[in-house]
Picture 1 (spheres, helix red, strand yellow):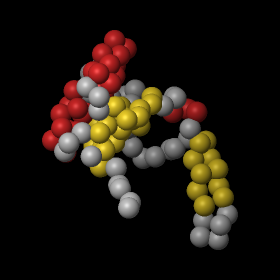
Picture 2 (picture 1 turned 90 degrees about the vertical axis):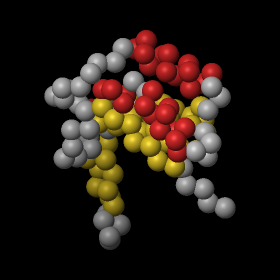
Picture 3 (picture 1 turned 90 degrees about the horizontal axis):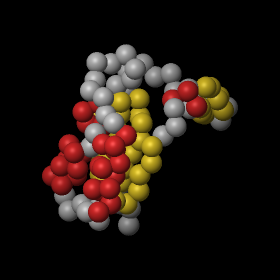
Length: 112
């Protein structure tokens, strides 16, 4: 079953643990070597984000940034293919992002 691991940092103000580039390289290698990697990307800096909203009348509004009322910042994701939720939670717990923020685990919807 496929699961998405959404990796959130707690932002620059947060009192979270630091992770090194080497930790991320090692985690990425372990996911790939285990054969569970489906997809994954790190996202560019939040300052490059653009938000699009469409009103009920179809009018499009485009603004710089996500400007959400949250301290969490989506930094990237993995999609993994593992037997069950317990395995997905195990991979999420190993992720360096779980120490410097949090990792949200969601099943990928399957439409037949």
